[in-house]
Length: 112
Length: 231
Image (cartoon, rainbow over all chains, first blue to last red; front, side, top):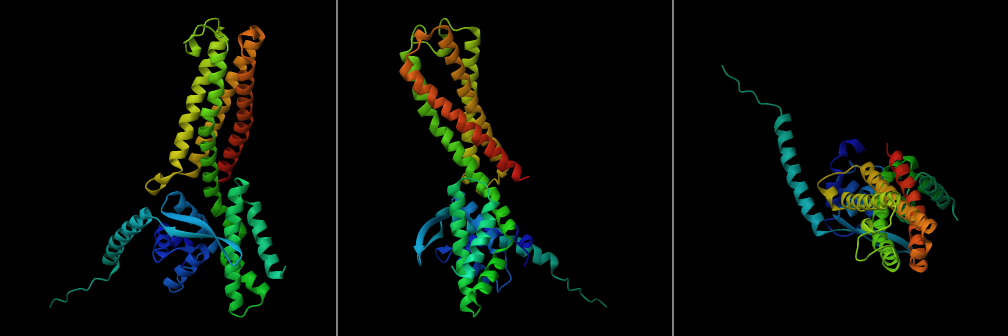
């Protein structure tokens, strides 16, 4: 799936991928890929700036730690991030239900 | 160093060359990016690829270096604008302290009197005081706007990074203008009535303002360049 298709949904997807616990950038990308059955295959390099933006909005919190002798930035959801994720889910359900209702083929009643 | 690591380092250098912002912000970004690349390359190696092919695959997964740098540019520009705004806000009490001390210890007229009511100030000096006060106010307001626009508000209101680099540049220019105004005032005072000034505090205050003039010019230039690069 192309990056443009996900435009507007990336923040929600990133928040959702952190719901199960803290992760570093590449693990978030792997989770997105696995959870979407390989559909979301974004250029991984573009995930990191989005995480920094979410951090500035205080929706995620990033901390540096050491792993295998390397500095690694690990992100976790903040309480505001959890609330935002719940709101994103609600609006997505509403939106997808409306789109499904419009796109589902009509079943014509046959009259004699 | 393995061929794989060399490829990754070359990619990081390519991204670095196209990134704006402070050295520290760029260093953090590149450290995180490299960590991700090494993870990705390690994954490919575990799946049986040789080191250099694994690094190549990881680089391919992360995307074109220019594309990655372009994705980072708005965020780094905002971080830079925010940092500049905080620096100016922090400098207000520091520089202000020295000028208040300089004014209080110098013989500039009857006290207690605000600067614009000091007796004996020439019309030109009074204008410089007014301009410096206005510029200081503009600097503080635009710096506060920058801090506000680059914070949590983006959850509800996506503010263009160009707006924040512009307000940060305005704060820098206004702070520089305020300092220039007050330093000009002091120079005119030195030329007309040098004995009225207390040399110690005035020297410290003038040095603080001159340092801020230098910083503000560079800061404004960087903010405007970062903003222009986002167009």
